[in-house]
Image (cartoon, helix red, strand yellow):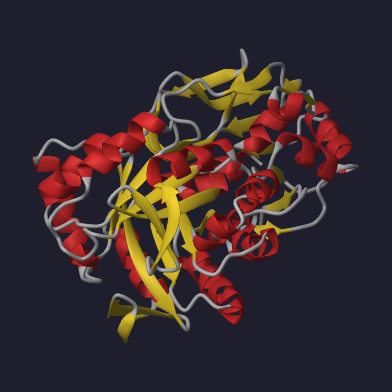
Length: 177
Length: 244
């Protein structure tokens, strides 16, 4: 059975990630270092998240250096970058080259289902910042949607909230782990 | 822009979905998890649960409902009713809700919006605005809040709200169509997503609302019947509305 650990760093909806992982038959563990897959979820703001991560930040850096899978979701993707514009500028984990900038869109926050290309599948987004990185492998309306760098996969959308399509995406992430 | 959203609204009291006329003569019409899951299967983009008992003790009950919904529903959902503090909201998000909605508590103490946005992120903070004749109503629309609707919407945006759920009280339950004029004024006044609510009677009404808003809240038009959501989606697609 695959094991999954969630990097916890504050208040918010982490339970949905946990429930989605369990639905796929994986086992939750607190061992962020040794889990088959580490998930960096997306809740709150960049500064409070980096503060809340504490020692888990180094564990995640070590995982990336060792080529062990990490999945970053929403803010979790943005935290993996070198820095974020949010909260007046915050240093990120620096495991993916790039930065998070204020989202340029007609309506901000950008909330709702939008298609991701290549693939054409719709997933649910809710964000006010976006990743700008050469590691982008899929976009949604011109915004980075999926980022891959080494053993890190980051998604701007919420697979745990994207119904059947999201479940399928998580399944793929787990099978890499 | 993301695709236009259809959002069924379920009124909840004592852990059950209830139906009543203007908060009176409530009757039990089902289980929130079963109905929510059925709407999700029927193509809902998100769900809104409004706890209309909305007392302090009901926040605990609401968290119980949110926890059960999160176990069975894999689309986003919002919880509203009785939230007066970051602590109240945190309990609901930790139970599995994606957003919380505040109304009277934000009117009474607008700083609450900033506190919620700072703690949870703007994307999790919906401000519900009940409006009638361009003025804001509070306390389940029973009182005049002494505020202009557009000005209050702008203040909510400045304070960090992530979305506005705008209910036209004079249209609510009439099935005469959404208040398109009010919704267009808000579209021009703020750059937040707006969820239109109040007045949906047929697919054309919903299609019209989605021209000026990013989402439509569906309440009485569905009659707590998920099959109606399926047929409504088909009608909207025939009208040329691009849905998920």
